[in-house]
Image (tube, rainbow, N blue to C red; front, side, top):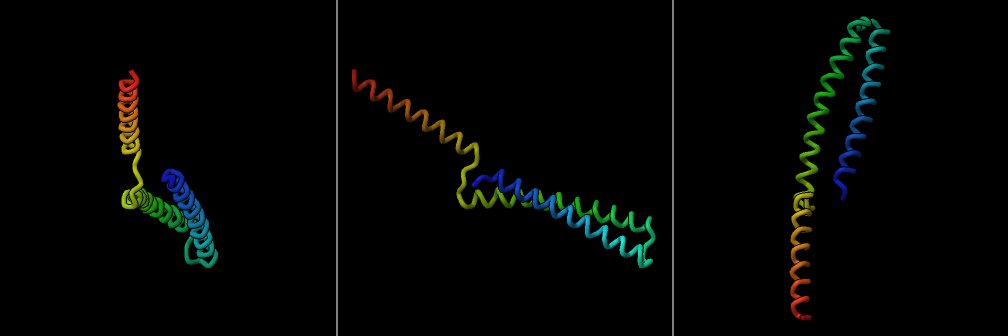
Length: 107
């Protein structure tokens, strides 16, 4: 499982969600202006305040998703990059030892 690809997909979903929410909140505020529930300045302030709050919460959600993804990958036993690098180093050392032993046997 490529965690970077999954994270990119989740972030793209987040971007799409942000765009959809922004569009819908603007539609609602325009409707409220038409019906007289808000004046245009109030609507603009409402949309700006709402989107700032939404983006702030979305940033927190993205951080939580990253932690959740990392923990999930750890729980199912997917090695992280440093563990893979350590194992590669151990394999390289073992291969060298095997070659050295083979060379001694053939002399």
